[in-house]
Image (tube, rainbow, N blue to C red; front, side, top):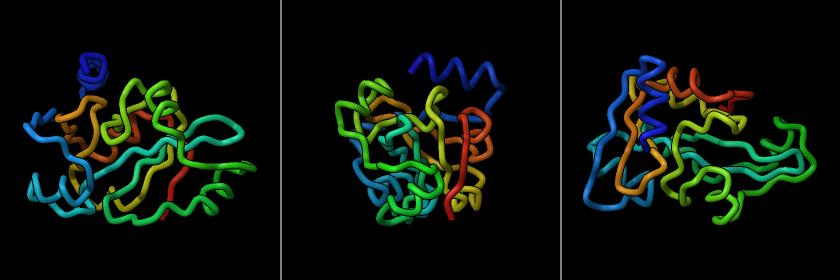
Length: 148
């Protein structure tokens, strides 16, 4: 997490790392815990394609990921969610706590997140949450597309 904090500070990002005593395993749990709208939670999913890995940052109300439309957006032949071991190898963290900031992974962002001044998502470390502005998620990641 020191790397994440270093990146955020170096780029003068307005953020807060929030520690909590329980692991948050769903968007609804996060919304309840922080007293925010479920749409304000941001999950980072790692997608595996025939062209490599991609990061998908979605709002907590997104529902089921439409892999078919993502396939068209990315212009790939094959796409699926990366397996837990692949996620850990690519990001250094387990599914459920993947950081919102992944400098080396091309990223797709859910436009719904921009409705909020701040969103809450992974830091790469369980039992911690990153509070950050959506524009700063975009600034720090290699964004290649948007959904919604």
